[in-house]
Amino acid sequence: MWTRELLKTNAKEKLRVYYWSGFVAVLIYSFIGGMGGRLTYSFTGSLSALQEQKNPAFEYTYQMSNAFLVFFLVLFLLLLAAGILFTVFFINPLSVGLKHFFLVSGERKTDVQELFFVFRKGNYLNVVKIMFLRSLYLFLWSLLFVVPGIIKSYEYSMIPYLLAEDPTLDQQQVFRLTWEMTEGEKWNIFVLELSFFGWLFLGMMACGGGGLFVEPYMEATYAELFLALKAKLYYSRRPHQQREQQNDWQDWQYPSAE
Image (cartoon, rainbow, N blue to C red; front, side, top):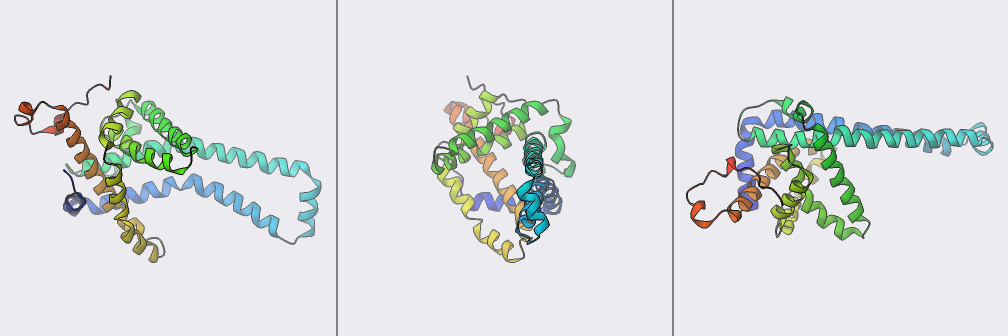
């Protein structure tokens, strides 16, 4: 049985070795991950600023030229589509790479290049597809009011870690395994997430930048959570007499979800 204290203690011990490389990995991911959003925000912010100006020439153009409005609408839609494609084909796989980095760094010495491991493997499109389906399902569940979407977000929370450890897993296996791993654990995961509120609040007080220094600690803790849930699922599937004979669950091969 895992506890928040145990996960955080393990994370702190491992971070003593690789904290700064973890910080660089988080920094790179945060910078790249915000590029698409910043582009769209900058465009919409500039358009809003123009609309608020008391410039008669602009108001006349805005009111009289439908072509002007169509141009900005098309440009906005293109930027929106580009942002979505950028997220699907780059940010989502990169998020799996971030989980991979913290899983690997907890076991052996590595470097920031592990952040891009998905792009070097032959299972890139498989990762793209499954992460896209995860986002799509979360969006559809969120349409059924807020609560179902929140519950499913915790149910699907292990998907990036499963792909980070084994990108060859297919869609059926991944969604089955994440359901099994989080069954009965969603509330505990929520409380674990909530326990970082104080750290994040302090980060916000430091002009928002302090949160980046907390991220490696959070990521390392969530990596420990994945390992704990994986161990729990492994032992729940093993016959009692075999559990005592084989304690090394690290070598476990994920069984088929069929």
